[in-house]
Image (cartoon, rainbow, N blue to C red; front, side, top):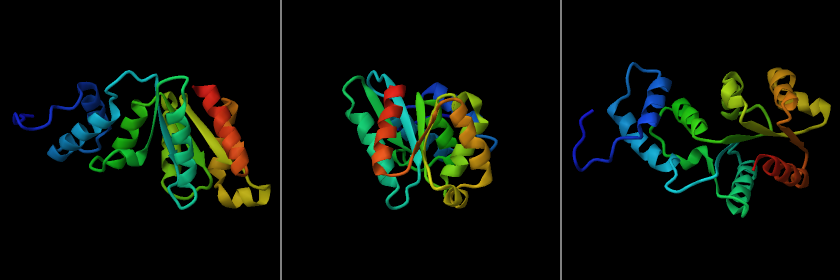
Amino acid sequence: MRRDEDSNPAPDQELLSRAQEYNYQDSLQREDFEALNHFSADILPGQEIDKQIFILGSYADGEKQRLLDIYDEIESLDRGNYRAFLMEDFPDGLNAIMKFKLICDYSDHVIGVCEHDQGGFQLELGMIVAMMDLFDDCFLLKRKYPRELEREKYNWMLDAGVFDMFGYKDRLYEWQDVDEFEAQSEALLSDVL
């Protein structure tokens, strides 16, 4: 694509190649290149970073705060140079699935917070499990409920499959209340970072 001298530089070549691979259309559109320029500036660190961590979960009232708590904890660690981000940290403009896959590609770890089977996080969790190379770098903080309520909160596929996969790989951290969430998220970060 030809660029004006005043336009933004072309996106990183590796990023561009991955975006083309994840694109569901025949080719990237002009708007995609513009969005990739912005995305590239946000995802590629300008300095040396030890690890980049992508945090996923529900943005519903009361639930998003847990994502922000993990974000703040990672950003405040003084034992390394870590960077955390949420999906919303990247501007719109790219297809949501392409954006999700690109963020995962440039993350050293993905941490999910699962409290129920509602919303977009279930799709993202399914994509993580389906892409085994991505799954190997993922961890899950799962809210635990009494057994009868757990069946209402989580569908059978999560309950009988996905959680077992994370548990088998020792990447499932369960919690019931705020204190347990804090303890489990600290344990997870200690294991990962």
